[in-house]
Length: 193
Image (cartoon, rainbow, N blue to C red):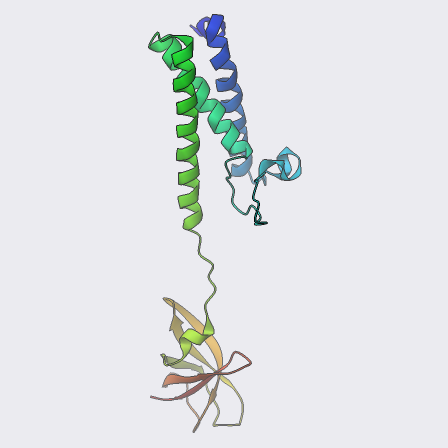
């Protein structure tokens, strides 16, 4: 059964298929066990990107990366073998379908990993979004000019605790407040609601 993979014209497809599959599986296993990938293959060679505008490659997948080359060789080889041995097409037609199969696999992998990259969120919240929001005193806020306390405010669907000063009387724990200013030291000025 496996003899057909290494006879005649099939050799032109089986070598890229096996090499690409082996490299792809090795790369995935290294990522799963915590290997960086780029360092595991000798520095930055894993993420080579030609970008004339000076942007750096920050993603785990670029077209000219080890994953891209492995995906292309894997798609080219297995589709070519399927065309040559399975469908009985000529070597020329099998080469063309193998090339298209490799390109399709690179496109699918690029879009899939791009979608995964899009799921990442920064977690950074702009404190300016707090202006005008209501919140609750977490730790007593002294009267104006007498020190700082803390308030809880929900920003971007996340509860945050900020240092706060009052622009009036003391505000006790659990008091409802409104943010009236964002200060230079990233504290909030609040007033009673």
